Structure formats: C-alpha cells, structure tokens
Image 1 (spheres, rainbow, N blue to C red):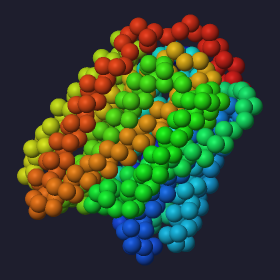
Image 2 (cartoon, helix red, strand yellow):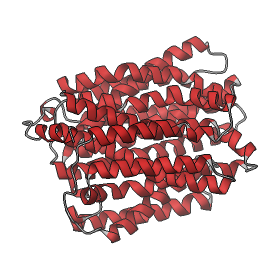
Image 3 (cartoon, one colour):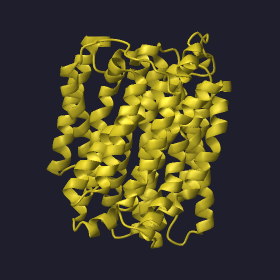
Length: 470
C-alpha cells in the first residue's frame, strides 16, 4: 500500500473516531443525563433514537451529494456539522435542546460513515482492499473498548457536557488531516436529485428504524408505536424499490447494482452481521447487569475483551482477504462467533468472569474477521461512479440489520422473562442469537472466493498521489 493511500486512510480514521466513540460514550451516560436534565427514561432515550434516525435520513443522500460537490468537500462539511452538533450538545440547556442537537450530530455522522468507505475504495482502485478495510475498521474496534472507559472517566471527573466536548479535538485534527491528505476530487456530475426517491426512501428508513427501536424497548410488535411506523416504512420501502427499478442509475440509490453478485452478497451479509453484532451488544451487557449485578459502566467494561479480540484479528483478516478471498475468511469468522456465543446460552450469574472474558476475546476475534471481508468484497468489480451507491446500500443494510436483530432479541427476551426466571430468559434469547449467526455462516458461502477479489489493473492509482500533495 503506497504512502498517499496510507495517509488518506489515517485522515479518514481520525475523523471517524469522533462519531464512532460518541455513540458508545453517550450510551453509558443515559442514566446520568436523565437525572441531571430531569427527564424520564422514555424521553432521554430520544437522545440516542434521534441520533439514529438522523443518520438514517442522511445516508440515502450521500451518493448524490458526493457526485454534486465532491468527496473531500462533503467529508469536511460532514465533519464540521458533527463538530457544530457536538459543541451545541455541550451547551444544551434542557433535554429538548439536547435531542435537537443530537439530531444535528447524527446528520454529520450519517454522511461520514458511507463516505469513509467510498473515498478509500475509490482511491485504492481495487488494490489491497482487505488491508485498507482493516485500517478503517480501527475506530469500530476501539469504540467498544475505549468508549465506556472514556464515558466513565468523564462522568467521574466532570459533568455530562464534557461527553460532547471530548469530540472537538478529534474533529479539529480530522479536519486538518482531511484538508491535507484527502484528494481534491470535485463534482463528477450534475444529475438532478431524485426527489421522489428521497421522499420514499428516507421516511422508509426512519419508519423501519423507529418501529424496530420501539419494539426493542417494549413488550413486542403489537403496540401501535411499533407496528404503525414499521408497516408504513416497509410500504414506502417497497414503493422505493419499484421506483428505483424503473429509474436505474438515475435513482437516488441505484438498486440495479444488486445484480452484481459480490455487492448483493455483501449487502445480505452486512444485514446479518448487523443483526449478530448489535443483537449481541444488547444481550451481553443486559445479562451482565441482570445476572451478575453489574452497573451500566461495569457492564460496558466487561465487554472490553470482545473489543480486544476484534482489534487483534482485523489486520490478519485484511491480509487473508487479499490473499485467499472473502468467502473463506467470512465463513471462519462467523463460525468463531457462533461457537463463542454458545457458552452464553448455558451461562448464569455464577459463571467465572475470567472464563467469560476468554470467551468474549474469542467472539471478538470472529467479529473482527467477519467485518473486513464483507466490507471489502462489495466493491469488487465496480466502477468508480458506482461506489457511492454501493456504500449507501451496504450501510443501510447494516443499519437495518442491527435494528432488526436488536428488536427481535429484545422481544424474545421480554417474552421469556415473563416466566420469572431471568437466567432462562437470557439463555433462550442467546439461542436465537446463535440461530441468526448460524444462518449468517451458511449465507457467507454466497461471497466470492479468491478469483473475483483479484485487484484490477491499477489504472486509478496515480489519482491519489497528486491530490494528496494538494
């Protein structure tokens, strides 16, 4: 991997650290925010829900915006929006203002996440995609490790506004590095905004995410605040699919790209990976609190071994993806996650914490190995203008999969807990998580092997060099 590409990757990773750390830091602080802002638990949840929904609204627009204004400008503008949102959050005077400013943060973060992948893949030109993905996944691996620790330290030493002030140095340094090392690409077209597609897709994503989010916090799918937005979102999503099929490349998101097998397989696996990852992130800390008596911070700290495992495996997974292809790496990764989840289906509050930590390290190794090949393979064989659409598709798949997995496991857990045995309830929910992971392991066979992952001729390689010196 050449020097310019490495600098680009570092610039993007530093900028992405702020939004990825922010979500884990804030999740630890919801109880404190509820107390200090005199808000109910139901109201304070909107600090997270508003952020999530704002990301869902923003993601579908990114492909069109990048073509209109250029990748570097859009990345820096998104980082500025996130920075401004962070400053405003730190100055919030009540829970309503905090929720509004979290929406501003979510708009910036929602643009950055798909852009992170697109800019790297466009600059790489098909070279060393596995190694690149192992670099850009660094914040994702570090977030669960450092986020709870940072949140706990901040709340222990200061007040809640510092949860958001801590984003400022990351964002400022990220802006400086972006100005220096991201290629100045400029607009690539003047395509008109697909307004109909926007009106269909953004509310569809919001409806599905909102309905699933409500389901994960209630007793099932029968409540009107669950099934109504979920049904409306699914109807709008079907309408968008029909509309985009007619519009093809002129659509807000070109769904015709799903005829490209690597992208279709990657989107499917991103959905399943999101369900397995975020579903586990729901069950594990809750089980630590309910069965072991840990508080929210303690439960977050108990997840550190999983983050360490993910951190350790990502570099090897990147090299193996480039060498032997995505299919084998992903299958092995999902199989490791599957095997390392099984012990939790038998665990209760008496389990040895050292044994739990060891199992979580192994589970993290599998999650790190799964993420890299799936993220990399979706861009194999795509032309440069198609990559923003591919990034949007995979990002939406991961978001929807995460919301789906969280909702299903939360409903299973709530139903099983009605029997009065918390340990048995968690064991049943973990069996459902194991089933989702087993299905993902089988579906990973759809990913291409070594041959489709061979990089194309590096005709696009020189593009990054002069721009990096810009």
